[in-house]
Image (cartoon, rainbow, N blue to C red; front, top):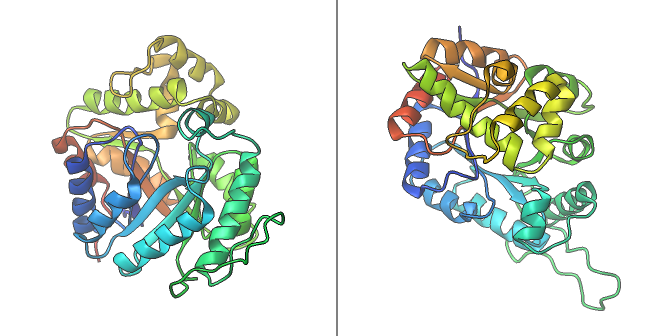
Length: 323
C-alpha cells in the first residue's frame, strides 16, 4: 500500500505555538507536501507561517484559510506577496468565508452574501498579485493603485469551500479546492463536475496510536466540536451526506461541547468512518488510502490538544512514501 501526496492541517482550536512549529518542522522532514494553518479568533496565521517558513526547507505553507471579511483584498494581496518572497515561493494563499459567529461576533461585519464576497475578494486578490490595479468604489474619485512590488501571478490560491455556491467559486477562480467536511464519496462527486484542472485538497481528522480507544476518542472529540459548536454549516453538510441521524445523536450526547472531551456515541460511528482515520498505524494508512483515490493532496487533520507523542506517531503513520 503506497501513500501519495500528503499534507497536514491544524484546527483553529490549536493555539500552542511551540507545538504548531514542531509539527510543521517534522512534516517538512517526513516529506509532507503542505502544512496548513487556519486563522479564526486566536493566532494570526500569517505571522506564524513566516516564522515556520524561515525554519523549513521544502514544504508548502498554506494559510488555510484567511477570512475574506477580516482583511481588505489589498491587505491580503500584500500579505500573500510578502509571504511568497519570505518562503522562496512556497506560500499558498487560502481564502474562505469563515462563519457568521466569527464574522459578526469577532470582526463586527455583517455576514451577507458570503459566496459573492468570496468571489469578489478572490478575483480582486488575483488581479492585484498579477500586477493589476485595485477595483475602486465608483463613488470615489481617487485614482486606482496597484501594488508597489513585482507581481507574482504564479502564487497559488486555494479556496476553502463547503456549500454549493462557494465550491462554484473554487471551481471558477481557484488553483485548488480546499474541501471542508466532505466524505470521500461526496468529494469525488463534486470534483467530477469541475470543468477545468484544479487541485483537490481534502482529508479526514487523523489520529494514530497503539491505543485504539484513545485514538478514537481524540478524533471523536474534534468531530463532535465541529458538529455541535462551530455553527450549523458542518452539521448541515454531514446531514446532506446521509448522516442526519448520527449528527443528532452527537448533538444530544454533547450538551456542553468541548473540542478535547467531546464524544461520538456508538450509534454515530458512521461519522467517524467517513470523516476520521484513527487506530494503529496500519489502520490509519488503510483509511487514508481511500482518500488517496479521490484527493490530489490528502490533508490529515490533527485534532487540537494532542500530546506531542501522539502528533509524532500520527505524522509518521500517515507520512507519504519518500522517493
